[in-house]
Image (tube, rainbow, N blue to C red; front, side, top):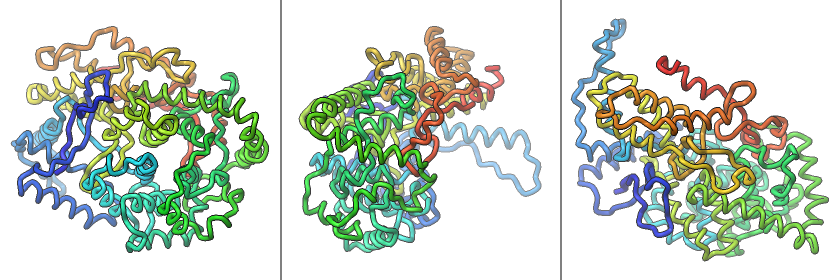
Length: 572
């Protein structure tokens, strides 16, 4: 049986933490775990999900909840209230329903005080991780037969009836995710003759083949050597050497977009491709609609399947790509410029990648960036400590549920803990859930980021983080304004309760640090972006590269943080 382990290092010598792994959640397989009844229950929820998978729902995340409820021997002591049609809801019934929910929420709290939860749904998370460990030659080292079996279960569970996969669970089929999940199945050992793969392959071919995959797909297929880099629009690493007064300087990009293209530009600049194996040749034959050597790669750069085109690409973007493709790249990729400029740019880009890795304890900012940064480190030096530290953090991204094993974005531990604690505090039944409130309080205090990124962080395009809370755990290191606001609010509410019940209140200096980091991100219009101060160059959205989403190039303010405080009358 699979079991969720909380707050453990896994005994890997290359893993480290700033708060003793508080909030870390990893899944491990124990072949001897569970009674026959417990195993039967696991199979029952698996069967029920697969039976109803065509309804397009994500998993209910039942595995860890069943585990926690068994371990705590939880028995619901408050009877369920029922309200008949037309019946007036009494205070007593509402109060009992609230208490019943609060007791259940308390029962599924982890030992370190947080509430586990998967953060997944997009159907393009798994494939890049598999491509990365395949290229590194460690597929069977990282993934046990049980891992592979559950990953196969997940991919098959979310295949649409037409043979494709959507951008997210329940979404209509598109080229990006259908291609990625097809490759995932092949990397996990499935043959092309399998019925589900044949159906998927027919969908891809019927919609024009993989030359119509969006830009991120072109990048990963080029890395895998199923695509040619000349079929991708340029991502020059020289971008990271631009003077910071330029509006298009990377410091003005949203952090997730910035780090994604940071590592992609390194791989593009190196023109790295996996070795041309028989497996890669098979994929070329299976996914393209014409012989590989006959493909017009120059034309393929601008091709995108209609199913993937969320927003049409602006003409100015095509002009920019064409200028780089036709004028800049042919020049800079040849001697002496490849030595004088390109190599210097690659070194600068790699410096930024290492900085981001180290300041996230090699978690990186998320699952899209993780395999890109790890592969870049491996290309630089396959035997480096950086690669070993990356590998030690891979289990943080594997998540197990009744629909199978998936890659999650990373985690939402601090975010969920703040909301769970806020809900429990609002119930006003402190005497019934004292231990839960105390444990949650300790988790919140232990999860606050205590330091800014190392060194001259501004020169590395980073913002202050001291006093903040992340979306996930403290090791992640990336400040989030609304997570900081919600956790700060909890600390203030908990400071009003007796310390013998909920523990010592947070020191004032740490509360001031939290306020300081929130105010540092506030925009002129009063709103606050999530991760970093908003860019004033909103027109940079015309340079967005992913065609399946909008508003991903620059950070933009919202009203979520003011709302966090306005929701609670005690904070007004």
